[in-house]
Length: 222
Image (cartoon, rainbow, N blue to C red; front, side, top):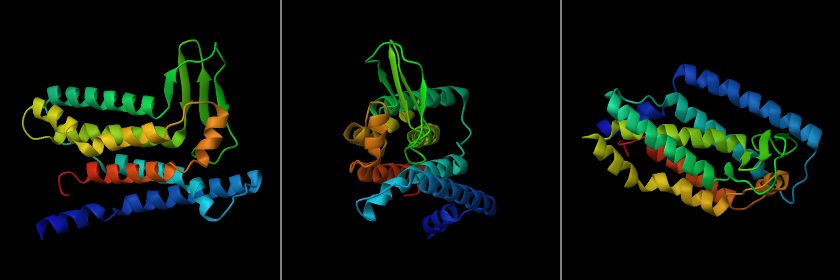
């Protein structure tokens, strides 16, 4: 009964959170409406339009997790370890998810890609001498949220800092986004972004992201 009460309390949004959620969702609806009016996209079916909404799922769930997560007090050594692990996790997600990688062309001036649905754009594109960037806003927000949740998870790990490390590597849910990124990740320019909008693998990617955020946020309640 106590666990159920605690879970209900964590699910119930605070008044300030509800107000911000109302403002954010309405702003997103306005941006989406403006995109529909200007771009006039066509979809093979009504079901196909769901890909336009997926970036907002990533962004909203990620922002909610960042807003509601407060790491527990911890000694400096554990905070530094948690920060290093979270940073490594973020870099791995970003690399596997296609946000950055090895360059494939000579130096190209960085570009901001527009025209694709909000959340997929504005995207930062760069393919230089050594580094290649395809930074999609929804993935950036989502991966930052996951890394912050991993940081909080390591902080909360019982026992020593070593236990926190072992806890992270035994956290199966932490590996799900990496596997999903391998399956659905795209590395490329504007054409890759446009293709990502209609790639069926994003159903899996969204589901994995939402479930992972839930499991990391409600530790160890569920």
